[in-house]
Length: 147
Image (cartoon, rainbow, N blue to C red; front, side, top):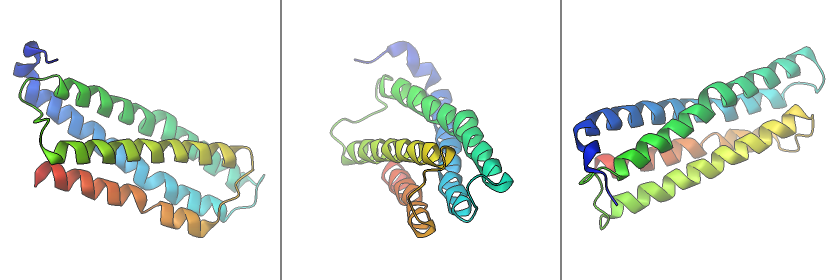
């Protein structure tokens, strides 16, 4: 199903999709890094509480809205006639990478709740490695779309 009325707005939809995706990725690059630093604090201290506020605000005010708008503009692009070649490999690769990014987003949300309740069981090294996941997915998404 496509909506021909979207054709005149294609470039606007694409621009807002890219802007939303960029904001989402910026947050996803930063949140695991906050977890690395949060691991270095003692639960219950003022410093630990500050990280809890930073993590919650980053998720609630930047990452979540950016992910939602990325999906909205992406779906509108999909509904625009001629925007997607359903037989092209890049489209399916991008979709899988975006779904993996969404899963990672969900994992980050779960980890934040663990920090919030002073129940983090993961190491600083774990979060340092996890911090690379959005970078790898970002590279895959950009390369398959552009190349």
